[in-house]
Length: 144
Image 1 (spheres, one colour):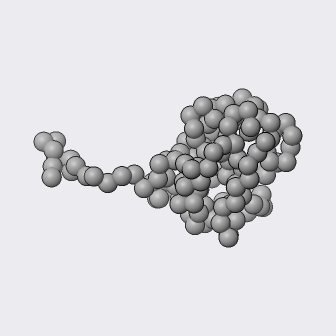
Image 2: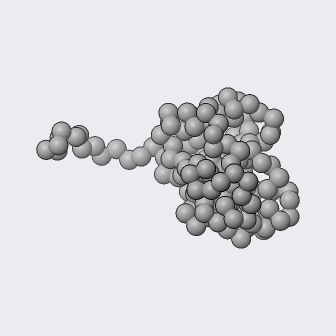
């Protein structure tokens, strides 16, 4: 069925209903951006909203308020008391690659393998949490 403007009307639901916020370290990683675009996974980039070097306590407010899940390679958030406190304060759902030494292509591959799990966890698992993205899957840890 077509509308008068020639556009088809579809009853398709979006493939994913979560939005990923790519932190400063990942927002310009072309392989990750390409994977998300190819899979039509909604995402926003840190540099759309903030300049480089802004403190976590400032930028974490935005994805928290918007309900966006954060994608990062910064494993320190779950271990550093001050950063952990910010994740809790802003009710963040964070997905972090298990190794900070992965190349952009390796992170994109892991991301592509786990997008369905990430979307499901972001929608169903109450915040705050940090989930590790590994070859074997996505493992969330509740933060207190």
